[in-house]
Image (cartoon, chains in turn brown, orange):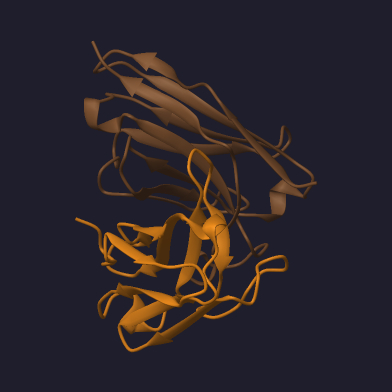
Length: 124
Length: 111
């Protein structure tokens, strides 16, 4: 079955870096765009970043632009999020989510399925 | 402040019907981009509920329905059940932000 499993979360000091991973299985990973979505404690969902199925395009939310980098390794069926210069307001559960439609525009797609999430806590 | 606006909470008795609104603007819903809805049960990851404004994935009961008009969309839930108690989020694409946007979420309480 289709499965997404995030890892790499933890407690990190402000200004430091962390890299999240999302291991995909049960589908042809290289055919789907992938996203990171986060949820601060007790708050709503916030879209963070997208990477095209072939890695050719990447887009970011303004709140993370210049600090976070999304990437993928299609040979390892794995999605990454490199987070630098972390701030307290980056504290959240980070979910990876797949485009529902393969090789389709982000604008006409939706998120399905989602991983279970990994918690990132930025605190001194 | 979320780009899409939802009521923070709605409630209804078992068996009743409730609706959740999602209001956007000319750069997202009003530009013709589809609206999708997700259900998040307590302590779990979000799950797709409605896609493409009004389509239900297999396995989602027909008690759930979606619609879109102009710069707004709505999720309707009929025959409320206790297990429907959850947070509901609308989502679309925004051409000005070049990214995905969510509503702030609506907490549904079944009385």
